[in-house]
Length: 350
Image (cartoon, rainbow, N blue to C red; front, top):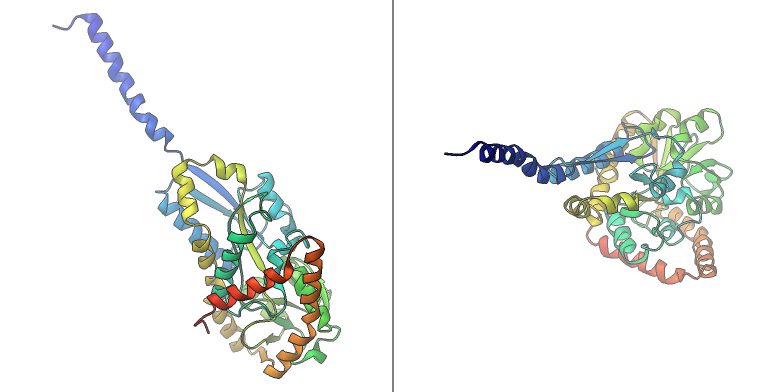
């Protein structure tokens, strides 16, 4: 027969047992990360890259790692401030262009030089991520890079047709980053730098005559309603691309439980970079067809004209190599490697 004292002791231990059993469950921490970016929720990058990527992370973590996306600068600030928001912890993760802060990230700029990168985003994404793994750890040391990539071909969208360099003379065109602007200036245009969300207002106010952007971003800006002429450069390499980074606050990354960090790691680097190619390579042609059916003019410059552009923008490349050397960077070697990586990942890609 169990005496009263023993019964009380046994009862207390049974009551305590669930609390002990709950400890591992409590330690199975659930984390929500805030991802901040500059485009609206209707944009192709938001719908076809950032959302699927966040859902993949959540699914593979068993629902314990959630990524809440804040588009259109909903957490405040301006697009050029996004990188520092990740550094300072204003946001846990950001998507931005390194080129929004000119000269701050000189090595990754090599892919933004005129006629270096591929027409297809999948080639650029693979090449830039491989380059980043080898060369950009120090350049992005203030954050934890999740992936680094570049879009596919950029086009000229303008209020007047552009078929040759003469048509570019004095044309006020928005550009996304420093080297894109220098290439346009070499070709005779009047480049105007600004983050892409400012393009519609700048067009409506006559600040610019057009913009250089890839096809995929056109609908989110309603650019097809504001200009009627769209100029493509045939084949690869293409006139320009812009680089992107998906970056995380270092302290937040370090604070994740080991198993959740492994899930994030498994969805970083090449895995994420190749997912990022989808909005440009899959949605770009859909947008182009939509613009064509709308009755807008799509111009493809001739191969002969393209070679004129290549030769005319060569000084931009030479100047970049010189400036890199002044900063202690072997620009010629980085350029050769960038071109080699584009060729490597472009094998068999039309």
